Length: 275
Length: 293
Image: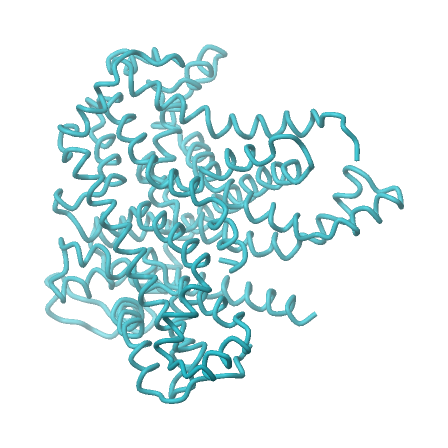
């Protein structure tokens, strides 16, 4: 239409980008500087020279906190277990609810739907009590299992499955495909993009958990990186800020990388399913 | 919406639903039931005797000025976070929807903060606003503002609002942008023919068409700011100084986990559940209406 540069748009969007990038740049910059200087408030935008702090936090951690490689490992294990576990059980239950008629089908659907309204934050104590009853406190299972059950993934997949044209199902049946072969050979390939989007959303969800790990895992060997960071700044007297900031950079990298790399699918999956 | 073509048999689907049904009952319904039961009972100091006391825990809760105070505080906090993050996101989305060079790059650079954990967002803001090390705090001090959110409650509230809203902007941006893109160009062009441009076109045409997105985000953001900000608040202020940033979720955690008041914290859990049920029902009634028209 017109070829004039839209300066207002560039200025507004540029400021928006800076609003997000500047704090992160500052964190990176601080991670390379002398902790005593940061403590005195002499923080600089220009990074120092010490990238060796990354090696130090990865192998040593900080006072009272496990080495960061271990924190990353726990976070990664937790995020993967939640993402994969949730996708597995949701594919099965959404398939059953969308393609079959069986007794209590609607009851099952509403029961799953109802869990949307019960985030872990509102049932802190009772869920903890249930976990304690099963002896799952301070176990990896306890860390991940209760977060696998929530409804979002099932509802999203149900939407996807309902949108699959009837002709496809009929054609598969004419070819003699049973329900299992239909799931494996047709439904899963057709929904691959939605499942990829779901994976991104769930990985980030699992990686960013804070309250649940705080409650259920008091053993420092099960500390995630998010828990580890908050512990590091909790020691208010002698915080080694460069280590905290290096850990913060390492905590952001994996989920941000996944979102950026899988951006296209992720945005589609997020907005098409409405939550 | 129902499918027309279905497979027969019920053993297979029952087996498929079973894992999720079991997890749901074990980790959602059972604890929720326990919370309701716990909220109606009182345990003695040793946990030996449990006594049914009806709604007494709730009466205690709603006559406790500290709880009422925390409710108002949470409401203010949630509204501030919601409007701040939605406002900034809408502004950015409107400009990112224009046909400009490099808009793909702008989008990527505005979307990534979705992946930052609430507790890690707190770290970024600590580096800016911490009374000793914060970069912005020094600037504030040089112009004569006595900045120390570790002692000043109002400043502490401001700090957790900023950090929480910052983290949520990109989520809202993604939805607003998708909403804007789904508005047919012809509608905007037609408005332009009638002389509606810029602010007027936005106010009279675009914003009303965005209403479903806005309403959906309003509910999501209220839920986010009420529940998911626990990590941010815990990392920055732990609810302090005093109780000045103690939202309802922080209070449940303090009362239940730190002070071990089980009956009271169960009652608080039930109140939070009712709140979130009300928000969800509101949302689905509204979105349901949109589907029918």
